[in-house]
Image (cartoon, rainbow, N blue to C red; front, side, top):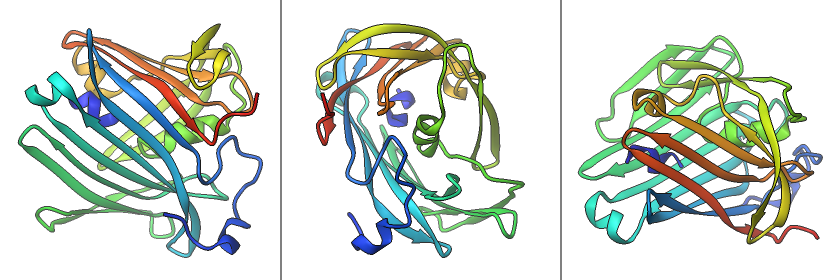
Amino acid sequence: MKFLSFMLLLALPAWAHATTNLPFQVGEKLTYQIHWGPFIAGKAILTVAGIEPVDGKDCYHFIAEANTTGFVDMLFPVRSRTESWMDVTELCTRRYRQDRSEGKHRRADDSLYDYAAKQLKITNLVSGKVRSYPLEGPVQDMISCLYYVRTKPLQLDVAEKVSIAISNDRYGVTVKPDERKSLFFRPTGTVEALRIEPSPTMPIVAANKGRMWFWVSDDANKYLLMISSDMKIGSARFVLTGVEPKPAK
């Protein structure tokens, strides 16, 4: 069930520094219904909340929220809020904050990515303990990578590389669309979509001998349409159910 947890604005003058030709802009809100096996398990929301300074750099502020509902919530309640700040120019993570409760367990920390000092500093918001790890170059976190991939010219059978750093874990992930097909989603209608299976996959998926796929719209928006996974502990899907502002026809 930890997989479920994986998945506000500043003044207008600050927006002028943002990259304007990206497929997402401030104010975008994507809503997902979470399915766990045959059950509707919860709801997730991805928001481009604004632009805020981190270490003197303007950054997109992303917020990812996920909460279980219904029967699944009675069995194993999940409340998750994860925030990411990605440099609007260099498109790398500068801050990452998470506050997750899964059943009776809670994890909360705040990470600062200091590229000048080549250091990742993480403060545990529960215990107050501070840890530091080496940081060799620009990286993404688990939320910013979803937006970073959207900035890439995704093409069938063409690989893109993404570097991800969370705590003392480093991932060099290959993103390579391997299938293209027409799919229907309520907020977009029928849209051409690219399927991506990241390699290597997420540790939680690999630990449960599973596989995971992302479907991204093959258009100017590059919306994350769906995430699906099959693992020995069950199958899960995040399905796009809402887009704000509404996509142009």
